[in-house]
Image (cartoon, rainbow, N blue to C red):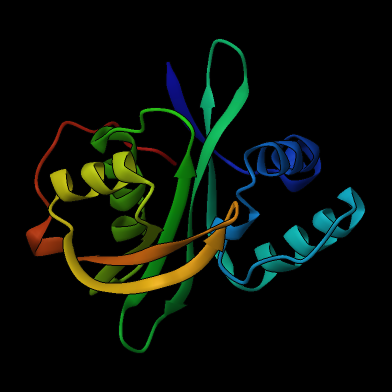
Length: 172
């Protein structure tokens, strides 16, 4: 069973570093890190959590405690009430997990809109977002170079009034 929890950089830094390295998915993070060493990654992560990354949740397999992905909110702009989210999952993330995260953001922040930024190869995440009511607002062709290939970046938007109701348990 998949579950969410907020990241603890001290406890989770090594496992997240290994997950990102094994998946080749450092490129899916906003403000892409350029690091080779685990210590560099840890310092970078702590700095991002202090500044740019407002909420960083790990998706874990509760049976094995293995990281299966992440969702994070960044670039919260209180003046216009918008924030961006992104994520990656090497599992079948569903609209319930994404819905929990989005509901958390709408509860915690006075948001006008949430923008999901992802690459076109994250079809499961895109499908989950569209099931929640996210609308494709932009496509940036060949925007990200990931694992030796250029991928399109999709930007999907959701405001609270358009959020489709699904059965979601709250996260804290």
